[in-house]
Image 1: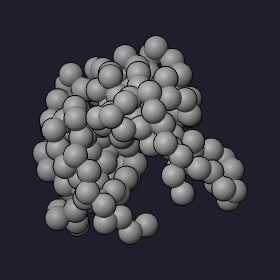
Image 2 (image 1 turned 90 degrees about the vertical axis):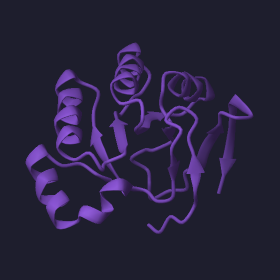
Image 3 (image 1 turned 180 degrees about the vertical axis):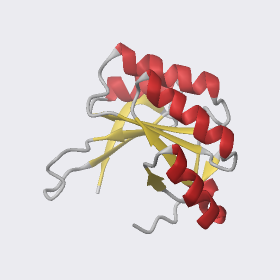
Image 4 (image 1 turned 135 degrees about the vertical axis):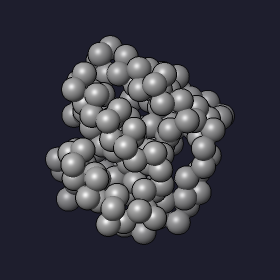
Length: 150
């Protein structure tokens, strides 16, 4: 995927011009970081929301300080546990850009934005071969407004 759009995020106060997400163990991150040091600012550490996952983020980001993105990826983002995980990660990493999801309602998009996420994963499903509309929330205008885009 070739992404050439720029974004500015309210919570982390960071800008973003590319999206690349990888899910590696800490030792695989070390190999990746050694092999591709110039891309570290444009990739995300991708984990779930368990305590072990949050610990994994801490280890990876301590060893690779050029990484600016964290992806909290769960199948169902509709739990207080997940919202608390987003808040915890935001508190621990206030300058990082946090990607969180998966959700499909405007109310949950708003909850995750207010809890500290910068990018919300919306509408991801196993039916990716079918048309799935992309929905984005614009927290600057109205966090309740989700816009279907093509």
